[in-house]
Amino acid sequence: MDLENNQGSHARHFRRVAPAWTLFVVGLCGVLAGGLLVYFILVNGNRLADPGDLLEEELPPAKERQTPLQPPKDDLAIVEVVDRVMPAVVAVNSYVPGSYFGRNVLVQSGSGSGAVISEDGYIVTNQHVIDDAAQIMVVTSDSRSFEATVVGEDRLTDLALLKIEQSGLTSIVLGNSEDVRVGETVLAAGNPLGYLKHTVTRGIVSALEREVRAAQSQYAYTYIQTDAVINPGNSGGPLVNLRGEVVGINSAKISGAEGIGLAIPANTVKRVTSDLKKDGRVRRPQLGILIQNLSAYTGDPTDQGVYISKVDSGSSAAKGGLKAGDVITAVGKKEVRYIAQLFDALLSYYPGDKIELTIERNGHSRTVTVVPEEAKTEQ
Image 1 (cartoon, rainbow, N blue to C red):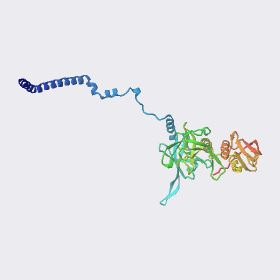
Image 2: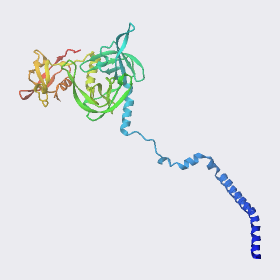
Image 3: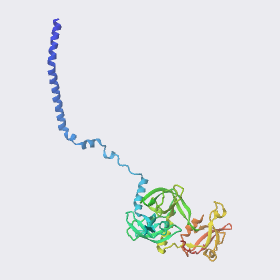
């Protein structure tokens, strides 16, 4: 019993003393912890106070950091071409006489595009854009407006040359359309719908030497086919390759079909604009023959060449020895498979030049030389 009572008395004594020791130990730990914290702050305070140091430690070395993504090489080429070409693309707006509440005014009759081809203000566009216009206004890429005069126009190729009185303009380079290849990337630039200024679309050359006939005429020329989007208002704008050269002037799209646009080849543009600038008209050679595609004459679509239905008496063709029934197969060294190719080839010559023609007659090939006169202008 005593033992148990002694044990009980000792236990009661311990419970009275324990809280004081606990507080002492906890206090001592708190003092030590506080001291350590103060020491840590004093020694390392600068590093904690500078967030930039922490960020610098967390970032990888500069050479390992990811740089901003760059556009693919092909896209960069397109961007560079657009930057170089677009300042030379203009809007062409035509106006005709009209009335407004009984007053005589000029009303807009059409809108299209154009390309500056010389820094002194010569601009090429489509003839149908400015047809019968009483006033033509050109709006440049920097939104300046100029009244343009017509230097000359040619319905047969649907080209016109305009002039504005301004110098120091950014101009565009007319390339060699004979170097154009099917499948190469091209850009169509212009002002679709007349108000979406300086729009560019991307496509490829879909085909070459598409035959396009002039309205109410036996004349025909070849065009470049492209799937670059061409809409009303794009007429007269440039078709450009990735070297920044104009390979064609956009002229039309096939209605009822998607992705079939047509552009006048640059070589045709160069010849026509040169003549218009110098003479105000295109000086075409005239042979004095009535023609049709051989395939149309025979009914066989595989037949190639241009069939001569009639030779005018006294004409250069008659003097050169051409006869009805002959089939023209080449002009100089250029092969001729259909009418448009014949007129393309003839556009390389002027009246008075000697032209060598290869013909088929009675199953035999022969060469004749003609000296053409100047064709009467068709308007």
